[in-house]
Length: 175
Image (cartoon, rainbow, N blue to C red; front, side):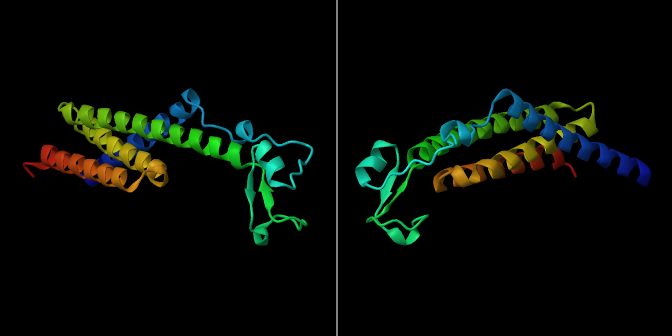
């Protein structure tokens, strides 16, 4: 096999890997919309003042006793974070969104790896799909990593390691 053919082959493989993962992610963003912070915490033209703990909590805020970090100098015993409730609702919705995106990308990646391993007739396409599946796992894990707890991180890494070892055994057992 000449050098030009190897370069062309790897160029096609890399192109398929990148475009397939872009396709997965952009299609997912069209089908499943990410929560918008402004939907949960709309910007209002007027500034709402809450100078007491009772008025703050009644407006969905959180009263903070420490005035050292108050956004403005006020003559009270604390300050009000009026976006506390809506921000927590947004963060919860965003965590659910990221979890669902993670699961979807892992499923799509697994399908690519499986399909890539069963395409015996077309080596190039089989390699490209297998690598694209692995990249889908990596992208999904990177997106969800900050939201996952430590046990889930260990499970994600264990599954990724098992899949990579399985691919190595299936693809390169006679090399």
